[in-house]
Amino acid sequence: MSTAAHVLLALLAAGPQHGYDLKKAHDQRFPQAKPIAFGQVYGTLGRLERDGLVEKRGRSREGGPDRTEFAVTEAGREKLRAWMTEIETPAPYVGSVLPAKVVVALLVDGVDQARDYLAAQRRAHTARLRELTAVKTDPASSLGDVVAADFAIAHLDADLRWLHTTLERVADLHREVRS
Image 1: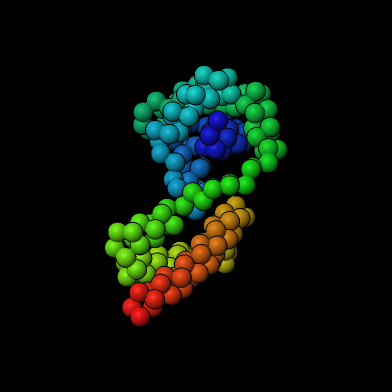
Image 2: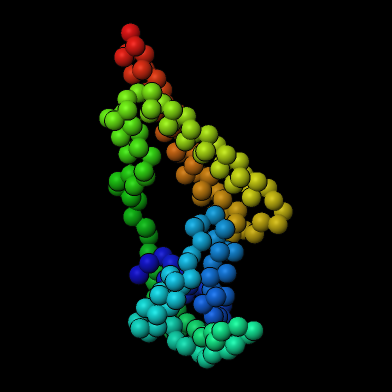
């Protein structure tokens, strides 16, 4: 089951909601994450219902189209509790596109292109780091916002260290090629 499905179960644990409200609640509680699409919400709710983890509770029309309200079942609560106790296996492989782009730049366009890409990417990472730091210092930020920002900052910091080290390696290679 996907992380999105577990998040929807958690949001429904607070009480029955419509798909539209779930999408809004997701995007508000995970502001640093990619927004969830309405299609993904409804597709996931359909699978959760099929699996007996949520159930329809009724329909309403609040100034718009009919909206079906969903509620988490006891089986859904159990599934959510079990998921929350599972330890995540540290990823053994790097899944980022960053190293792939640098290697491709080195293969296709050479050292100059790789260096330019690394410098531009470092600027983008630094700008995002500033945005996330602002979230942490904003008095309006919730604890969830701060926790998500901390997580993203730690990953950006690791990326920035990698970018710095790789930029140095590429610069050394550039000096070797030019000598």
